[in-house]
Length: 469
Image (cartoon, rainbow, N blue to C red; front, side, top):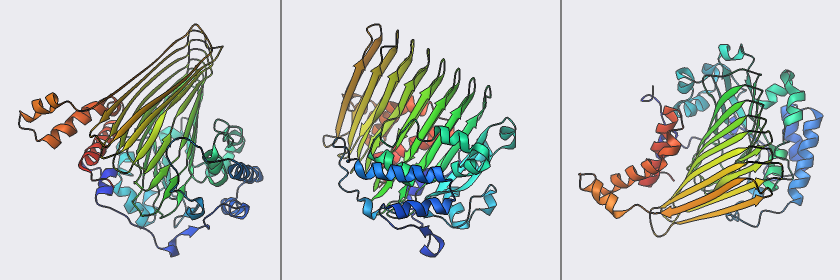
């Protein structure tokens, strides 16, 4: 199964930069005006409340300044970003009906081979729209809904979506959340009914193929009481000589006694500004797991957040970031404990090489209600040369005396003694360094399904070779 799959990294290595002709692509003008927002909404035949939401978000976007901290966004000019690109054809549930150029791209990324192997359902987005969505019948028979948000709105789920859409990530959160609310397109809606436990993952894959464009997918997942779900998200894009933008949004609602694992492998190209926002809220005795691997983009700002609102709820975050030449990746994790006996564990790894900048930010808030809360944050950084940089910036707001909260950080390099040991056994120095880095990343890769762990290791190997641009 694994040997037949083409990894995302292989596509980048071969520079598979296929672009459809303008004749096969619908685009709205670049820039942000009410007219453009109305055009996007009209194309999607949306209800009036969604158009009103978009226009309100646009007002907030124009009134909100760009954050004055973190990586520089000077190279991002929204006047040059196309906010909507519609690929040829409509969404398909039959893979053979997908247009050949799009199908070829995703076939090389391992879709739908992975679906046939072990996934419960797959969604594939190309530029601004879903081009393929399918769910196994046995999964649908359990009452699980997995579709595009626009499709769900038109198929009886409008009230549920309106109740939840951008409630965890309001447009006032930051400028790019407001931007997302104004121009969002595509993404996934997942609903898992009470007590249903899905044995195999659902996957959604995003490919931004258009030059100078943005991708603004919205993922909304609701896992009801006692239910269990693993959702996998993958992202990729070819390299261009102009800025591309990814400003998606993920909202996760985890019910009482429910469990959700959300795994992400991101391999954006190094002209990408990745300004994604992800947030979960967890009810009593519920749990959320984040598994995150970030290997691409010129600039990254990504801080998944867990709001533990129910007693005995928990969050676990395991992540790795690899910042290579020309990359400034500002990542981290946020936790809010607002109920008794809530627990959170954060374990992150960062690697920097070739002058790459890796910054880890953690934010822990423990409210007065969070009696006996426990939060442990650990960040380990590995720098592979003296041109790279790694920073750790913790923030803790503790408002209850009866809690246990800790933060630890370490920054190091590959030891000469370990390299000497490996080289003395006939292993070349570059291979020995790669082996050490893979071992450093093992806590993350072991949490992924086998195919995705292999994909992550392949990405690390290519980064070590300098083969990903």
